[in-house]
Image (cartoon, rainbow, N blue to C red; front, side, top):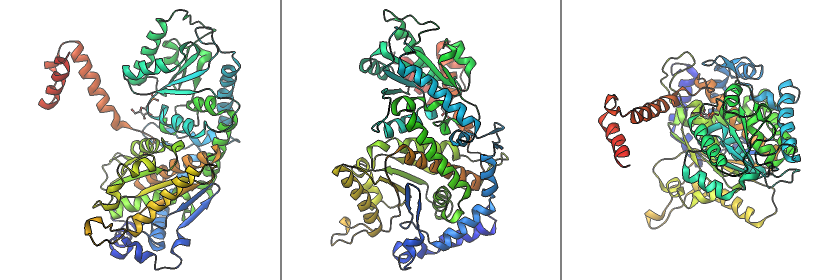
Length: 512
Ligand code: F6P
């Protein structure tokens, strides 16, 4: 990769000091105009970044050379793009109303949603469902949670409140049980594999609690448990009645799965129309991604800017900062999407690569972050790419306050300020990207999330890695299983672990 002429040209461009000086870039009267892009409900301002048209054009050439266009077609045409698992990646099919999988998915979801909201489906206490508790982790949690939070304020025909139980923690489960009406709750075990330990432990803890409550009588007609999974057999083994299982295809990656059955909590919380609008928004972005030239293709541009910073400028972090409480879970969702998809050191052929891939992604609600970690953005020694995300249409004065703060931060980071007392001064010249959504509608949110998904796919094509697997997460899980087994069998001494780890395990076992 490093030997290819475009890579070398980009390395040279990044070494030219003036390209990293925002003052210098702004001397070009066309700079702003050439770095601002719009599509449907999204307005993207890249003009406060350390790059100009020349660098952007070279990055577009890099994408061409990486055969991004045919790679996009491969994904949309259902060809195998997840080479490790020998699977296509079919999440975009679920957003295309002309695809049979769209109809199938929506029909399955809406049929069960109607049965739940109409009272046809009863809990194991013979009661109507008034709440849903989603038990799932990673992609079976972050996407639904983000969208439920983003859309529940919108008008919809159904409003079933949704709660989430993700990590294994008795105190969380106990707290949850205190805040819900158990007899009216439907517990939804969301797990693509149906083998994730945390989810199964939480499901068991909930089953045990339910059994202790008088009047709990699960049968084929009434159930307080349902499942969403690509592994229906396992869900049946656990005792979930067949009509309470929403399946989805294993070709839908966990972190790309909120559009599938995994989106059931969204349907209950925000309604069927909102869910359809979410899919429609994402589909618009899918078409844009497929058809738009790279020079004005939002997901491609986002990916190219991130690659510029990561591989050519040499920055290793990335921050996502939504200035709207309804998008507060976006950074966590993006963190899994980017780091689990492109945090890899092997290319698609299994060879170790010699260039950095995923940055460390972090973020939070922008306003809260201002009072927590923005000090380092303004006066810290390093810089990092930042995405400021705001929502334009609203009817509350506090929203303007948030937007003005978002805008002020971008300006302050770029302009800086000289002070008599040098320690009070801010150097400025810190980059940022601003992304504005027209409104907080399901359609806009669909566009935003699909944009980030395609950004990640674009990164992976250019880095020549598979973004649809996550083999790296398995080792830690295996060691945890091993420790548990050895502790249970009282055979810790037989473990071949380092002295630090052994001492830590002993600390835990001896503290009981
Ligand atoms: O361990 C990581 C992971 O496999 C993620 O990729 C996934 O989103 C999460 O665990 C949950 O997996 P599942 O939906 O199979 O329970």
